[in-house]
Image 1 (cartoon, rainbow, N blue to C red):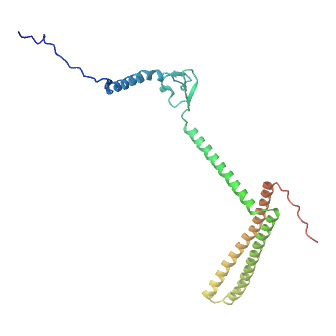
Image 2: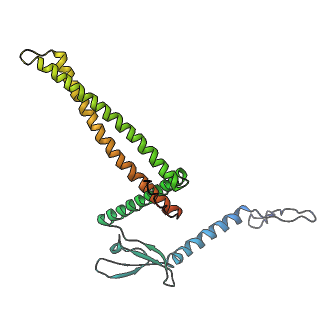
Image 3: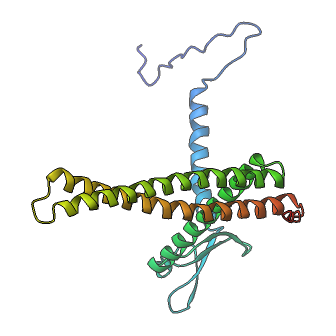
Length: 241
């Protein structure tokens, strides 16, 4: 008698384990399940964390807004980000107007110029202290500078005297040709001498101006030196009679 297929019991062999063997399930499905679970938890927690902060701001009409996302009415306005306790955790400054930007840039430029001026003043002060060890050094420097300028002044005055003397000689020669054509060389000599005389006279004026500038410079050096060192100015020595 034959058995039907439904009556036939299938025998599924079970894995045989040796004595002391430990059954190990595949790891990949478990790891994958954990990753999926973590992702779902993160997605579920995202809305809750997003609601922990609020935004507070005022529009152009002074209306105050408390929203979970920055409202369009407050674009470019000052805005505070609040914690769930209501404390300010972040402050966003309002957008600056062109006038405010210009004022800010001008202020930054002014500060930079002041900083550069302070640095330059410190450099000059240090250079002054490195140059002079005493008030006497300043006066000695003044004396040397004045002597050089005075010697140059005398040299210029000498050249002026020579040019004036040469001008008289050339004028006398010019009289000789009062009634006839004057040679071109004589006319060139007169013109060149006039140019030379004018140049020397200008140099003399500049040198005399330099004498005054030298005194002003060393007066200022002395003032700053005494101020930096805290020394008292020495009394001027009266000239001997």
